[in-house]
Image (cartoon, rainbow, N blue to C red; front, side, top):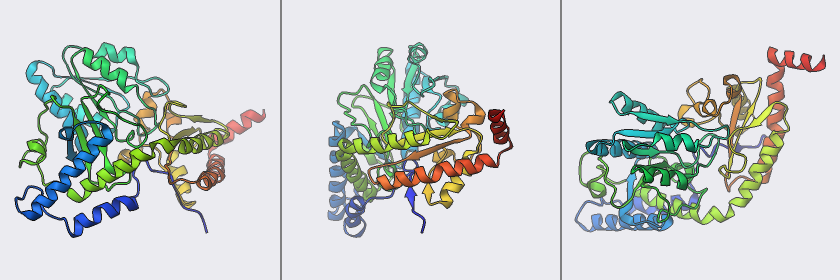
Length: 393
C-alpha cells in the first residue's frame, strides 16, 4: 500500500485535535450571540473577549488592536482599501507594494488603480527579497500605505519587515504586512515591530478555514470595509464567528509554543532540498536560509509542473506548484517571473511545504518518489532527448 504524505501545508492545514476540542463546547453549549444582553449572550461575549486577550498575549499587543475577519484576503482588502481611502482625504493616495505579493494584495491594488489610486510595484532580487533602494525611492510624501508581505507564500523568502517598516514611517506612510505564511514560523512581537497593520488566516496554522484577523495599531484609523451592525467596536460588521475565533486563539497559542521546535523542521527541509538538488538541471527558488522553516520550492527544467503534481498525487504525495489561490491558472508563477526565472523554467517548479507533523519517513518517501517521476517525464519530452544527445556528442 502506497504511503500518504501531505506536503502542501502552505495551501492549508488540517484542523488540529486541540483546536477541535476547544471549539466543540462553543458549538454545542456556548452558542450565544456576543451582542445579546441576556445570560447566553454574556457568556458568548466573555468567550469572545477572552479569545481576543489570548491572541493579544501571543503578539504582545493590546486586545483592542485585534479585529476578527473571515480570512486573510478580507484582512488584506480592509487594510489596504481602508488606509488609502482614509488617508486620501489628507492628500496621501499612493500605495507601494511588491511584485511578489499574494493575489489578495496584488488584485486589490489593481482594482484601486482603476479607481484612480496610483500604485508602485517594487521589484525583488533573484532570491525574492524586496530591492530596498527601489522601495525607499518609491515611498513619497503622497504614500498612504506600504504593503509588503512578511514571508512569501510560494518560495518562502522572509522579508526584512523591520527595516521596511522604518522606511515607511520615515516618510509618514503606514506599514501593512500580510503575515499569513509567517505565523507559526516567526516569533512576532508587535510591541516592537514597526508595523501598523498585520493580517493572518487561521487555516494555515491548524484552525478552520473561514477565520482571519487584522491587527490595527492603536491610533491608526482606517475606513471600514464592511458596513452593518456595531460588532468589532463598530469597525467590522457581522456577527462574530465565535467557535472559529476560539479555535483561532487556541491555534495561535499552540503555534507560538512550537516555534522553538522549528529546528527539526528546518533540518528536514534542508535534507529535502539537498536531496532534490542532486537531480540534474534543478534549482532552489527563494533564499537558501532566509526562508520559512517548512518551505521547499525547486524548479526542474524540461518538465511541466502540473504533470509532476499529478504523478506525485498518484504516488500519495500532496504538493503544489505555487499559491493554491492561483492553481486554476496555467500561467507561470508571477513570483518566479519577478525573481527573474525564465518563463519556461518557471513552469517546472514544485512547492513542498512541511510542518511539525512531517516525519523523517515522509522526507525519505518524497526523495524516493520524486526523482524517478522527473526522469519519467523528461524521457517523454523531445526537448530532453535533444539535451541528452547534446551531452553525448
